[in-house]
Length: 259
Image (tube, rainbow, N blue to C red; front, top):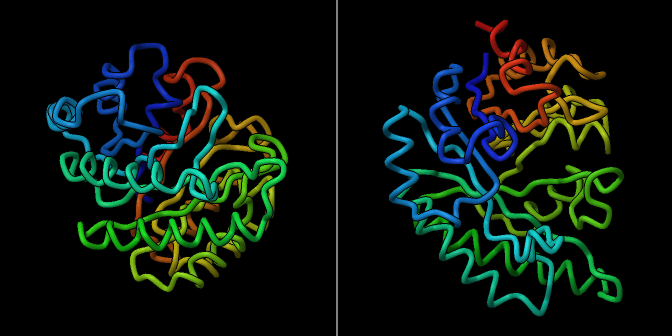
């Protein structure tokens, strides 16, 4: 079976964020991910990771004003300097946290912004981030997020769109973050798609569809998906990024049954 990481932005929300690390470890996870670390000092987070024998698997570049509805700024021409400052901030955090990969959120396409201009901006920002991360020995992930249900207007909403960016940049450290839930909404045909894209997939995230709840609550056959990842020889982490139906503990039967 793949190595699983708990997404602490979604799981164990019954307790404060800093207390979720211990619960993840006690539940059997050996890695954690979350949206953003920037509300805390990296040294504080590192201490908690080490105390609970956890690996920091992934987090996102600064997204702009998340609480105001922004979902990344990489495609916004008027936010390039802010994006670059965010890359430096993410590298500092990742270095302290011993995290080898960070994810870039492309952002929402604003009304009135020419798509070609947004695309050119995105490519320039990804190239800049890739070069900076390469110098730190880190991988830059790009994620496709569905634009039908969760984020209407998200600029990269299919795996094909992400692959266009990767192929345009041609940097050795730019890879695909493949979110099973988002791609089930947009594309389906999950196993064959992952087989085709395996050389570029650095990280996988999971939730069932519809509802974005735990595996076993929707239409995705996760038993076959996990078996397929093993068969393909996937070596990365699988992040449990779902909204628990019920308590987090009640939602973890799928994980316990893998043991």
